[in-house]
Image (cartoon, rainbow, N blue to C red; front, side):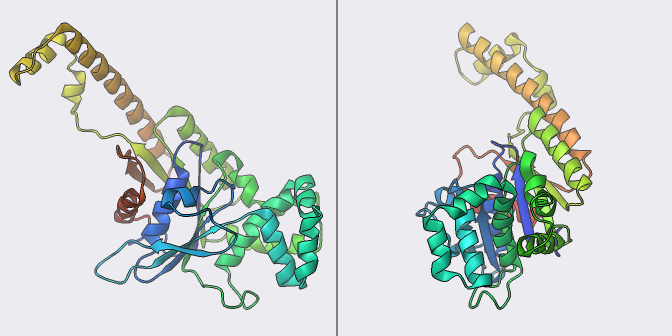
Length: 327
């Protein structure tokens, strides 16, 4: 059973370097089971989806990416991908709501679109989130478009996520009334509803865990729905506490000799130093895991994969997320 059965929009954020894009992709694969259609979106202009799935750079068009996670001998779903940029989103908005086909493209050529989104950054966020909103709330204006069972957004980092989603407040000083303000207010009804969950990705280090805690508090303060915390890049814990505590060079030398290896002093010293460093790291991770557990939200863990992240690894991570109840 999923921990988030009512959620249609999964927003994934995290401090830079924690692997939020990888988690977003794995979550999309995990959700695309039993014939479900899932849309994986990105808004930061990095073409991270294309690199992870080893495909050509994505245009501003929803594109079939791959099949989802196979489950119980049933037909897997399909993951589609979309790279959203503010300029294309504005042109689509003008064409859809104001029928400005050629006129909208003319505005783009003279730089009006870039000018407008530069002097009013809040408008840029409205355009980016507006396309995500449209994908979740498909209606007759977008004829022939795919209706998705879930949308996963690879969102901006934790430090900017509240500002990014809280578009109504961002426009307060720019537009009191009008269609853009009306659209922002309508979008907030989705972003603050049980159909949305903001998941945070962290690693077991002091700064990312603290930023995750601050992000959760900020989301709560702004009435935005907090999802789960994904602890990513977890190191294997194959050594017991007694083994970690055993850094006596004589014991290490005896163990080496017992398996037929020459217990040279340089080898023993190197192993002892690595063992102590690993023990310190494990102690730090233990403390940070306790802090994550005290955040009061569901938590999930994904391992550090020695071989790196390719499509096979994404399916492996997707299976782990589903087994833990995130999808």
